[in-house]
Amino acid sequence: MTDQSFYVAPPRCIQSLRDGRSYVYFIGGEGTPVKIGVSTAPYERLASLQTAHWVRLEMLARIEGGADTEAEFHDIFAADRLVGEWFTRSPALERCIEQVRAVHGVPAPFYIPAIDTRPKRARLQPTPSLASGPCAFGVAA
Image (tube, rainbow, N blue to C red; front, top):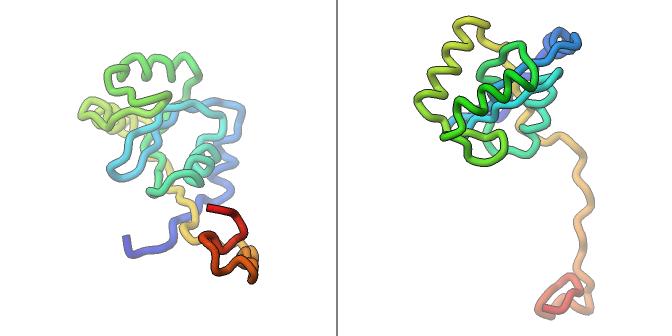
């Protein structure tokens, strides 16, 4: 991917889904498993997952529903479960996502900035007297 930035969801997009309703979401990235979960704030959940993921994740589909709807999807795709709420991208799961998108619409684009803009922390400097040892930071090897 040559583009080093991701789109950012407009705040109104996030606010529009913080209406007390819950949504079953399908989140995944290119070539990655799909997470089927439930949240009252699915875009915030996507942002949370993105911070720990190395591939750009996207909201593949979402449908209004609670834990019971989520459990139904988990049961339907039990054979594709990897661990927890993560599922292999089987042809059946891909078809399901496309059907949800066809009926409930395509979720708004939402991406997280790819470049860390936080200030850099000071780096640990080696102790001069130990700089020639097996570990330049003063810890015996």
